Image (cartoon, rainbow, N blue to C red; front, side):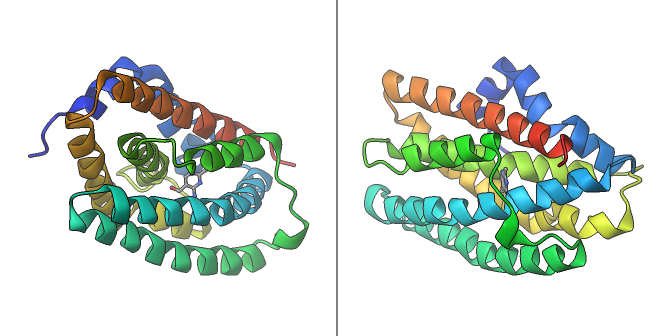
Length: 221
Ligand SMILES: Cc1ncc(CO)c(N)n1
């Protein structure tokens, strides 16, 4: 059994934005098969650009895990994340040719740019380790929860989209998210009130940015 910690308390407190991020109309439309394929293509192109900016962020999380954590296993968890990002970029490229999305011509939309700036701000050495880990967990968990929903019983997810859903909805990714959550929880247990406040704010901000990212995708283009 997983212990209930402060992150679960925050999710309860911010339930409506959490649900907005993890059960967005775009994700629900994948699950019920009504998804507009131009939206999916928009999402694909934008998320490819997002992931390219996410890589240096995760690299900075790795460095912080080496420097700031007393637990040697933190580094191993984050390193696993970096390894899967390597596969992910390859997957995006294959998917780009499958859907005829030429990434070299995709321009980041506003929601994507804002998310990228947020990631860059988190890379500052001023940001405390528990805050970074909370953000990192939230970013990964939204995709895990969203895409796992598209694979749950009763789904009508179009077969050509199940690859995307498996990428983040598989059990290994769920385990990985749970390991990151445990790291964040462990750090938050010893954090000051000030750091706890910052971590809660960052969690809510990630959820808002994720909602905006889905909205942008659903808008198509
Ligand atoms: C917008 C967004 N959030 C999270 C992830 C990964 O978890 C992703 N690939 N894209």
